[in-house]
Amino acid sequence: MMIIGGMLLCAGAPFLLLTALMRAGQSGLALTIGSIIGGALVILIFASGRPIGIDPVFAMTLAMLGFLPALLGSAAGAFLGWLLRRQDDRAI
Image (cartoon, rainbow, N blue to C red; front, top):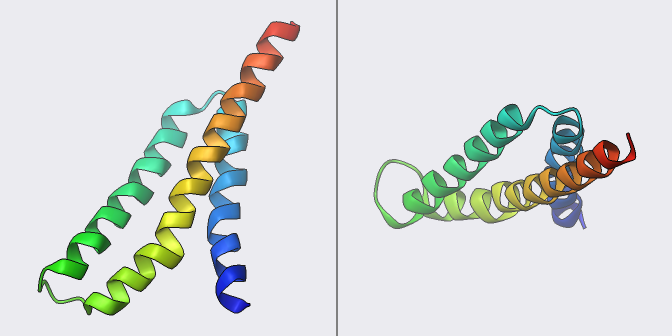
């Protein structure tokens, strides 16, 4: 139960943050945050297959339980924020 709660927290925080940023028109900052999360995910996946000093099991666990939900949450939040921004712009 703690694992699912941690995954929801890792996905929920970027979702809310990127929704607010995209709705406020800060798409550059939102894409930067998404790129940082994606870069960290790629580094951890690379570290799980190559001996670069990180335990492969820990790297894959951190990637799949922390950074993958964060990346999916940030993508969904950015998309929702973009849709809400378009709706706000049409209402004016």
